Each structure stands twice: as structure tokens, then as C-alpha cells.
Amino acid sequence: MQTVKMNNNLEIPILGFGTWQIPEGKAAYESVRYALKVGYRHIDTAAAYGNEASVGRAIRESGIAREEIFLTTKLHNNDHGYNQTKEAFLESLTKLDTDYVDLYLIHWPNPIASRSHWQDANRGSWKAMEEFVGQGLIKSIGISNFREHHIESLLEKAEIKPQVNQIRLFAGEQQGKLVQYCKDNQMVLEAYSPLGTGALLCSPLVQSIAEEVGKSPAQVCLRYDVQKGHVVLPKSVTPSSILQNKEIFDFTLDEKQMAQLDEMENICGPTQNPDETSF
Ligand code: A2P
Image (cartoon, rainbow, N blue to C red; front, side, top):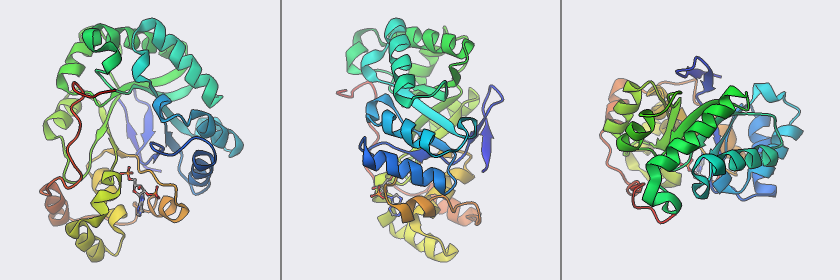
């Protein structure tokens, strides 16, 4: 599996299995088990997804050595701040039933629960996360849905620079300035909703490129992100799609196809402003 090197010299597999919107229980357990069976070695979950227990059980019962799997989870919006983060992370670790996570992210920069003091709350969370890195309970730390001003505020006090920023990224939603800012600050970009939660698969352009290269629309979308150097996190509960989404390393999109996708309009709806979310 192709990997990307983070600014702490650790490697992250460029393809991960996204579990947002996969319900806790049978669906999460079976889809993660299947993803691991067919070769995924990177699983992305979050406290807010509510499925950490099933994700953890699927990893454990897969029989694959823990150190062969890259596991990410994220801090819940209600748990920002130093003490809350300490508790919340340990709770995630217990639910996942593992000794460490490979990557822990602040899920949203400015949740409603700490909106009046989001800068201090994020810095407190970050300090707690840095301490867990020191203790070996977290290997890498990062952020999600952060924009430039959120990152600047965090960097003022951070001892460890974020290793990744996980954001909504797909053909038509390039977040160009933010992506450049993250790259300038040595962060790997992780693309969530790389299929536009499915909506991108209906794009006539994506479909026509898929025909040209003899691949599916989903594979074209994922390949597009991978060629940009982004980590991709497709979600599916359908075994044939889980398998298909992995087969993206045996073809290349040419310059013209990449340029056409670069110029696409966003057909999947605007990305939420994290300073205005209601959660
Ligand atoms: P399902 O989970 O029912 O299999 P994203 O990763 O951008 O969030 O997109 C996830 C959506 O795309 C889900 O609705 C998922 O459906 C669907 N999906 C994932 N992979 C494929 C695929 N290869 N072909 C068609 N639909 C897919």
C-alpha cells in the first residue's frame, strides 16, 4: 500500500476506509472486517460517529496484527479543553479496545459547546494530545475541518505541529488556498467525502473520464485525490464497492483528465463554515 510521509517521519497509508455514517453494530463491524479482509490497512473513525466499539472489535477479531493497521479517531465536539480531552481520548481508547491510536484529530475547530473560547479550548486539547504522544498512546496528532485562522491560533502555542488536516476534498471542492496553507505548514491533507458522499458519481464528466480509462466513476474520483498526494477515505457498506475503491493503483489519469477535474464546479453542495456550525 502506497503511503505518505508525515512531518514526524511516520507514514500514513494513502487509502483509508472511512466510517462516517456507518451505524454502530453489525454494519460497522462487518464493513470494517470486510475492508481489512480485502487489504485496507487504514481505518478512520471518530467519537462522534458512535461506532468506535464495533470498529475496535472488527480490528481485534480480524486476526491482523495491530501494528499493521493505521487507526484514526477524533475528539468529540463536546470535549474540547485540556481535562475533557484527557478523559475523552481515554474513553475512545477503551471503546476501541487498543493500546494506542495512530492518529488523533480535533474533529472541528469551533464547536458550539466552546464557541466563546475556542482558541483556548483548542490549545488545551492540543496540550493534552501532545502529552499522550509523549506517553506513546498516540503516534501522530492532527486536526480536521480547520481553516487558516484556526491553524494559526493553534500554532501559536503548539509544540508539535499538526501532522494532518482532514477536510472535505473532491473534484469540484478543492479548497485551494487552505490546501496550499497546509502544505506550506508541512501537513498532509486527508480527503473526507472523496466521492462527495456519492453525489459526484453522477457527474457526466466523471462518468466520461471513467469510460475513457475503463474504470468506475468512484475509482476516478479516488485516483484524482491520490494523484494530488491526498490521503483518501472513501466510505461504503457495500462489499463490491469496498473492494472496487481499493483498486485505484493500477491506472493513471493523464494531465488533461486531471485538468478537467480541477475545473469542475462543485455539484455536491458547499462545505460548512466551521465558525457557523450548529454542533
Ligand atoms: P454505500 O455506503 O451504500 O455503499 P463518500 O466516501 O464521499 O462519503 O461517499 C460515500 C457514498 O458513496 C455512500 O453512499 C456509498 O454507498 C457510496 N459509494 C462508495 N463507494 C462506491 C462505489 N464504488 N460505487 C458506488 N457508490 C459508492
